[in-house]
Amino acid sequence: MSVDDNTPVLRGCIKLPLATDELLEVTAKAKDYAIMHGAAMRSKTNFSPDSLNFAPFVLVPSSFPRKEFEKAIALQPIINRLMHNVAHDEEFITTTLAETIKVDEFTANLFNIYRKVLAHGFTQRISLGMLRSDLMLESRCPELSPLLDSSAGGGDDDDVDADVEEQEQRRAKDAKAKTKTKANPAKVGGCTSSAYCCWKQVEINTIASGFGHLGPASKTIQSFVLRELGHAEKLQRMPKNDALAGLCDGMVKAWDIYAKPQAVILFIIEEVSYNICDQRFHEFYIRETYPHIKVLRRTLTEVHRDGKLGQHKELLLGSTEVAVIYFRAGYEPGHYPSQGEWDARYLMETSLAIKCPSIHYHLAGTKKVQQALAQPSVLERFINDPEEMKAVGKIFTGLYSLDDNEAGNANYEMALRTPEKFVLKPQREGGGNNVYGLDIPDALKRMSRVERSAWILMDLIHPPLSQGYMVRPGSAMPPQIVDMVSELGIFGVVIGDAEHIVHNYQAGHMLRTKLSTANEGGVAAGLGALDSPYLI
Ligand code: ADP
Ligand code: MG
Ligand code: MG
Image (cartoon, rainbow, N blue to C red; front, side, top):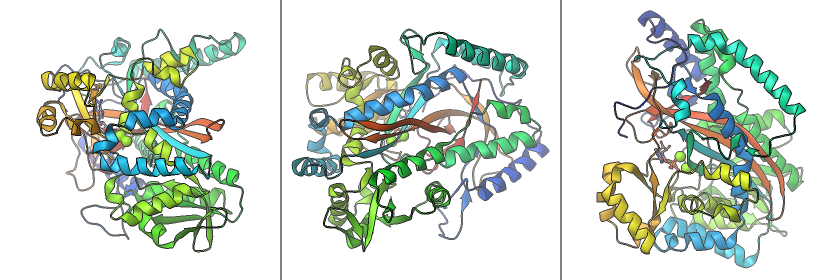
């Protein structure tokens, strides 16, 4: 990603640089702390199922504007409902994906499952949505300027800290006043229809939304570091994060709805799970909090081998009945090495088990559907309340179709003229699939007109920088101060069928931070680092 010299820098959490001795000592401790608290992954370069490396992390939390954080949290239940409604709109999904599935084989395979399930009727009408809405701050937002660092080299927020108590008191007073006055009808999810929102949605994930454990674990490491550095008072600006509990409770609520005491929760996993802690901690949380609920882990290949439907279409693995299926795999072509894995996906889809996600939720999370949602007046179809509609509309950045029609061809020409403004995205998940800026024209020119409809074009978001130390396994010590940008993910849980939503809540957050020079920042993919917000 090209970051120009004018990109603003957010004020830092503590004054940097740290003295070398102190930095070396705290970094060494933090690495051990991370491994010993499960902020870890299997090594890709030196894989062993018997060992872990710490996951890359940012030593000190990155600043994030409190107001924007609160808006994002408050908006999540509205986004959950939006996605639930989209997933249940057969006509919208079918027409939106019509061109894409002609050329994108993977999406076409998913869509075929959807089509077959529609034809036979849904065996299980309830879906479990565990979503993660990802967003980035937009540095051009005028409301960010008071939070920017005017001096080079990190910055400090001593002034802010001096105010912290006063601010907390003011907030408490405001909250009290609010309960007395009638809620302002123009205020929705913390966003007003007139207020500026200083962030844009990058994407929404409806399958395998990871970091329910690593999100909260990042806060634990950085809290430890801040205490070690003598900044315990800063911890009060790190928001609580119950993502693991929130997500696991979602699975348990679905299990309760299924209402069969012997039935299990099934995690669908990859052949090799590098991000093992993030999955196992979900499993351990469920086993420790709800010991009567059993958790199984199986690959799609194993489900193909061992799975069948019972008399009432219940999913059976051997003789074990499955109540809930949680997909941590199945979102990319490599997870389906043969027709057998597709058959397994179809078998699960036609079963009585409650799926996270069910096939229509998976399709609702495609980039193409996100692009369609951002078109003028489309939101009206899914959100009744005009204030909510405006609040959600504001978080979309420009998203453009590349379908083979007049509008799509005009967007194609626009991308060739000003590629530096855009990112080009295929219908894929898991990072590493996009094309950025000046690479776009070549990529587009290699495609036929119809092939382009497998992709969408999106305005690049320009997040502000933060400065800090990124710690990676095997990297030189002491770490150097680097320029970084962050992406915040807000988790949401929504459970219901086409007519009713029975549970809908915001379920914590995660922050991932990457070098400002990197296009993408997947932690598992090797470019990003665990982080957590320090609210300013
Ligand atoms: P995936 O589903 O593979 O995670 P994303 O849409 O999240 O796909 O894109 C991957 C990464 O690319 C994001 O995490 C972000 O770092 C970067 N990215 C995506 N869209 C934009 C954008 N509009 N502006 C800037 N960076 C983006
Ligand atoms: Mg994604
Ligand atoms: Mg993403």
